[in-house]
Image 1 (spheres, helix red, strand yellow):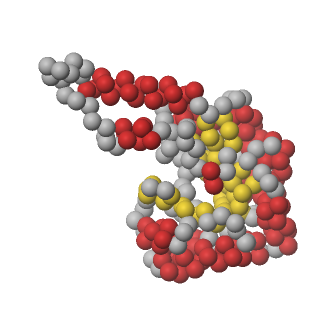
Image 2 (image 1 turned 135 degrees about the vertical axis):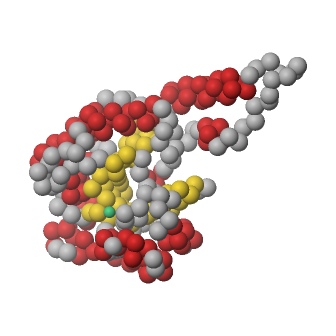
Image 3 (image 1 turned 90 degrees about the horizontal axis):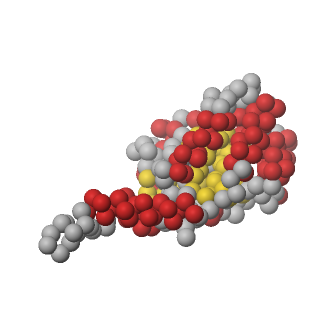
Length: 263
Ligand SMILES: [Zn+2]
């Protein structure tokens, strides 16, 4: 996979055609890409189902589905939500006590949903993430930033909107790793009506793995939100998606703490 990264970043040198080299550099490059793809296709694919904004109505159903399907899932939690009611506190504890669920940091206040203002003060934003970590006693320094698809981990730094980049760098300097997503699935929470059908999102995941268009080849991060699954219909769709993915014996459901799987 690192070789594919190097190839994509044009870091590999293919000698030009001359009296010694008879292989067109374009052909050499394509052949190398084909052989890397063939190797990747033989390996396991790693699926990260991530659920944002919990605990919310919907979280306990997600927790039960993970257990029933026996798959690992990832919860990016909003600290404040766990304090909103006894029920949500209990739902958070259900997540925290489920070995198939890893709990991560999605800030304490969810930026009050005023993202630009929130990210204009990186120090206050950092405090907000620290408060979430403390209030939920989170074990991992893993963050998803509200309203931003930003990735900072290992040697990767990918920023979608500059508002948020300073906060992201400050979080990283304070030991947090930040993860975005490759694919988002949307369902209307109250009605359970999908914006994208199960088949659409399943096909998109399969195609992105096939054409290596995820951030890291053979690893795909799917974003969902807990409140999408408050309705039985939505819960049914989540079960259906998991069943579709499970048909592939080489698809493995993973924790973000192990992202990305390399070979
Ligand atoms: Zn969110």
